[in-house]
Length: 384
Ligand SMILES: [Fe+2]
Image (cartoon, rainbow, N blue to C red; front, top):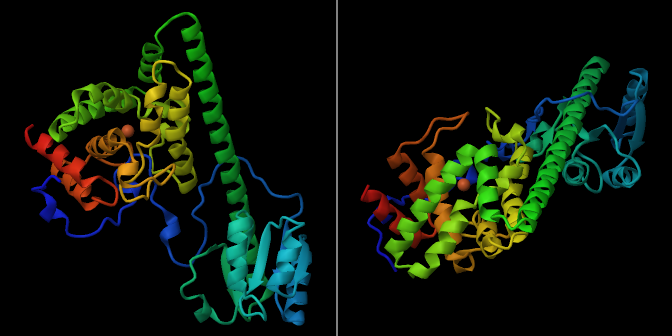
């Protein structure tokens, strides 16, 4: 066990997600408590069902029928349910644009129903309708609007409008993510086919990949070279056998090769990514490992790349490995990658200076980073 001279700086547990140490992570709006409105980004064409469909869920027949009449008078399609259970049954056969949901109902209450909708019908806009706003304390589900009973037709119409807008954005965001995912998969396939041609012509797969990376993602290629140098210096400090250096350097140089397949719209976005975009960005880890696995020259480092975004405490991806189950090369890459990413300029934020980046590394140790690797890394850093 290495005694770390910097250990005293670890004064609080790491509350940061990967956002703190990676360029590809968004500010998450999902950490908010109950809120009205949408965090969705406005993109693309308008996408609604031909005639907006509204599910009214309320146990009081008079209230239910009145809202249903209002929906029809607005020119939209209305269905009603007298309970959460009846609503769930209706949702099995119909995808509604909007659900207007009472909170206090016999059986499962409206907040339970909202949770079910968010899980299984994430693109249905929810409008809560209640006379008991205090019941919403502690609820964290995003909704399009909140109607406080009693309310008039004009306010109801406004809530339906907000629901339509929420739904429009949700559908557009889903379509945007589908386009991004398709683009990423298509690029992976084309890179693999290019490498196959190189192999067939007895060319160097490694040189071909380096060429593609420096052409398509020059910043990432330069970052990867720096990460490789950090990893080798740290390996020496840790006493890693020199015969392992080759694989460590290769894995570090290609740890971000999957970004070759990341859509340019994400790589060059001048603002933080949305949660959905960040999820697609995270696919670069598997994409890179999949590409390397298809090669003859680099397939042996594919597992090291696949584990290069795992966290020491188990909170990383893609497999939530922890501790020594993460290969040492991957743990080295995680530290060097985070430090280098933090100290580089980004379109949406300036670089941290070295002491700030070191403080962040320490703050996220051991939840994210291996303490022994961090100590060795800081020793190396201190010599420069
Ligand atoms: Fe990286």
